[in-house]
Amino acid sequence: MLDAVANQRLCRVGPDDAMGRALRHYWVPFLLSSELAPGADPRGVELFGERFVGWRDAAGRPGLFAEACLHRGASMRLARAEDDGLRCVYHGWKFAVDGAVLETPNVADPKFRERLRGRAYPVQEAGGLLWAYLGPRESQPAFPRWPWMDLADDHRLVTRHVEACNFVQVIEGLVDSSHLGLLHMNGLRQSDSVALGFAQKVNSMQRHLAPRLEVQETDFGFYYAAIRDIEEGAERRTEARIAAFVAPFTVLNPNGDIATFVVPQSDSQTAFFHVFWSERDALNREPLRARHLDFIGLGPAVLDAFGLTDETIGRPDRPGVANRFMQDRDAMRRGESWSGLPGLIEEDVAASVSAGALRDRSHEALSAADVGISRLYRCLQACVEAAEDGRRPPGALRAGGWHDVVGTHGVLEGGDWRDLLPRIG
Image 1 (cartoon, rainbow, N blue to C red):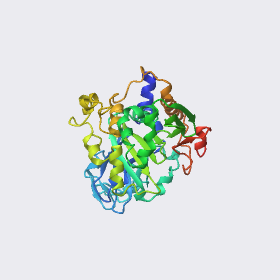
Image 2 (image 1 turned 90 degrees about the horizontal axis):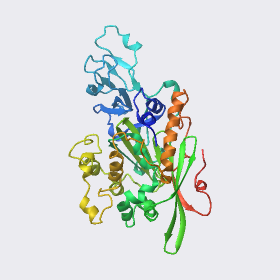
Image 3 (image 1 turned 120 degrees about the horizontal axis):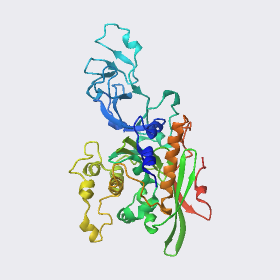
């Protein structure tokens, strides 16, 4: 339970907010690589309560600009896209993707532009995503190199959708194993007959609704373990599913081949990036791509129909709070659907968004099933406190690769769940 002041402190993400300042110490994904074509029109991007413009020049170099032109503040979303830079339509100032001022045609002094630098931010492209760093240059951390970034594009499937609520309540669902066998009851039942790696890895969760839960604090955040005693006929085994929370918004799923990035666009809207990968299977090649997305509920048609795209979010003709997310109540009464919602992603979105754009936590009744939630609050509080004290927050301290931080699962043979991990950092 968090009182109103503590809750606002964790959830508000603007440049003048405590959490907003903490978030600016990290590299953050802001678009899929495929969403910026070379030389195409500039694209609006919202991050941490601020407005930006993403663009890729004709040579393929990506950039992220402050939306307001350096000169007089006109929106760079209106800018002309030229081969080597974006040109503001107001006075013709042109900026390269790294912020270099290429031309100032309304200023006679040819050297004037050399004294200026456009408000562009460091950008990296890796793993099918575009990443930016928005914080102080002197505090810029090493870029996080995840192992899946080195796979061929065919073996990595990356998606993005948007949700109309605060980022903390979206993350809460990712460190809450006990909802899986209930909210996702229908999807887990279908996994019995679906020949997909994802489906098979989550199948057993329907057989134990109250797992034992443990957490382990780390230098990057925490590990969260859900331990289930499974009985299938004469067979008995103990399974552990371990998620890694990497501050401030990354979760490595226990399946071991899914990373999620829950990025706040504003106090009340969140961008959710999924990365699925396989060294063996070409997940990003048809027909496997479509089958994978359809089972989870991340296909383009589903995202559009449920109002989870930039173009459809908040539209009254899409599922939302006002229409109870268009639940099929008749299917619920007939026992054909637990939630009345069509898929895994839609169920998670409805649970998160229905709590409000920024939910009140002052009256929640946390239980033994919510140890991951409590640890999440403490970890985010540590991020805020570190930034306020002038220290780098958890997860921003690491240098180099992240190969030793994993989500994983396995059967315990009388040992501890930590034995399944490469190491505790």
